[in-house]
Length: 176
Image (cartoon, rainbow, N blue to C red; front, side, top):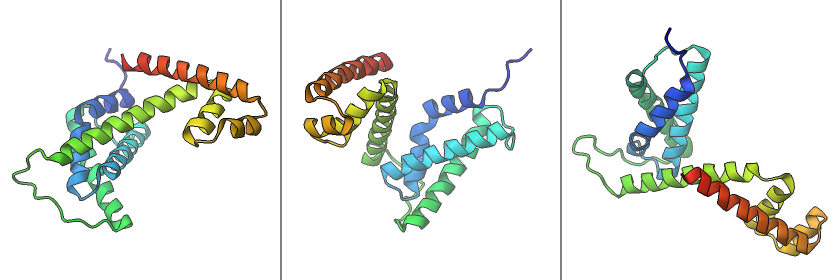
């Protein structure tokens, strides 16, 4: 008996194999690296919801690739229209790797690292998460954080130290 269709596993394979090509599709529509990654994420969410709802009934990577590329292309065009980022389209023939490809890969790597860090921060206990958020992300002083959380300054420092240790361990664990 065949295994049940898992749209999330299928999308994971598409992301791993085609992420740079999908970002390139959005970049060719005139978007910057960050906006291109947002369009790819938007396209993947749209495709996942269509697969989960049964609105789309393709069951292999090859059938989904062109469909997903079309979703990303439309999302990029809509974003350009919405944000008035009209830039000339890049010519399709004669495309060669440029610094844009390296920029796209860099932005993809940054987005992936951001997701890993967010997942690790979410694993912290509530107090450590609050300390990390206030001290590191919002860059508040130690005394201000202590007052805001009703803790002593020393306790805030200990919590921050332990949270950093836990974050390092979590990031090393996710890197391997």
